[in-house]
Amino acid sequence: MSDRLICICNGVTEKELQTAILKKGATTMDDLKSLTYVSTGCGRCSSRAMEVLDRELRNKEVDPQQKLGF
Ligand code: FES
Image (cartoon, rainbow, N blue to C red; front, top):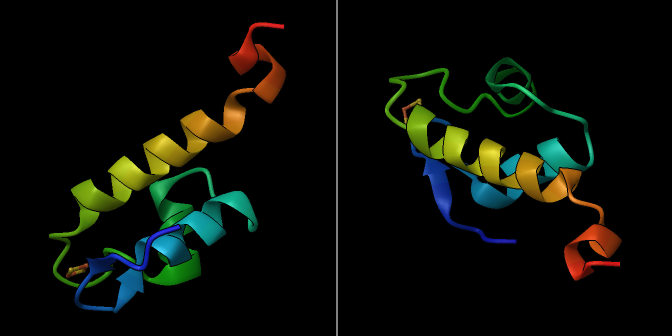
C-alpha cells in the first residue's frame, strides 16, 4: 500500500482509501467520502480517488485461484 497523498485538502493517502475499500467495505465514492473525507473539499482529487476505487474493487473481486487459472 502506498502513502501517496491523494487528497491535499483533507490529507487523505492512497493507503487510507485502500483500507476503507478492503477493510471497511467501501464500494462507492460516497462510501469513501463518508469514511475518509476524500474529495469533500475542492474536488480536484475525485478522479484519482475513483482510479484507486476502481483498481481496488477489481483486484478484490478476482479470486486468487482464478487468477492462476485453476
Ligand atoms: S484535493 Fe481532495 S478535496 Fe481538494
